[in-house]
Amino acid sequence: MRTYSLSSLQKLLNITLLYDNGYKISKIAKIPEADIPNAVKEVVSNKTNKSKNLNAFKLAMMNFDQTIFFDTYDKLLKTKSFREVFKEVFIPLLNEIGLLWQTDTISPAHEHFITSLIKQKILVNTERIQHQKPIKDNKVFVSFLPENEIHDIGLLYLNYEILLKGYKVIYLGQTIPIESLVDLKKYFDNIYFLSYFTVKPDKSGINDYISDFEKFLEDYANPNLWILGRQTQYLEKPNLPKFLKIFTSIEEVVQNL
Image (cartoon, rainbow, N blue to C red):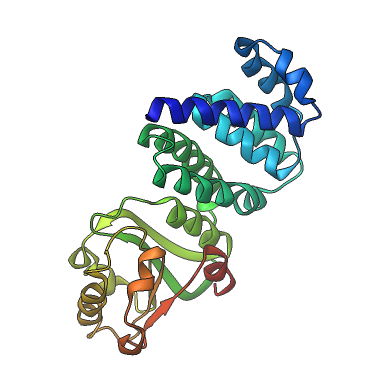
């Protein structure tokens, strides 16, 4: 069943991309099926429209084709900044990938392939500014994912934005238990803990998690926890501690930096 879905989606993406670039249906019908991927690769090198770029990245994912990914990304960078590429192209792409994964149209291998390439780009751009000395000292961000949470693209990108804004950020990464954060409180008196709840803690555990974090911060003079992600919808809003701030998007976090 999955093989049929993947094959159908690949053909649809190929035909859509060719059609969007001026190919008439009658012309596409005459192209031998084995030659369509080559025609697509030729078209990919000249794309500027956002929807065409999204299709190109999806084709790269479906075919496990790094060349299409890098060619499309490099073309985008000729007219856009990395921030623009991430917000205008990668975020919509990741949203679509989520839907494709949920409907069993793509496999985990496809998702991991494309997200690994996107993470590479975030890390490369982060490294370029990491050596710069922080120019703002009113906040120190500690970025982490809760225990058993491994979806780190959003947090990695926020790490980049925080550095870009001139703050010190300590990036701890995936699946960090609350008790592992204890030592941070000894070194800094203005910490803003930042986390992204994509799948964990889940609906049954997220309110207990916030209660545990409240206990963790009860002896800290300046408690702050910023969170975002789909699991935040299950928080019991009337009972939330004052130190907790919930965001609905990456852009909203960036605006509050």
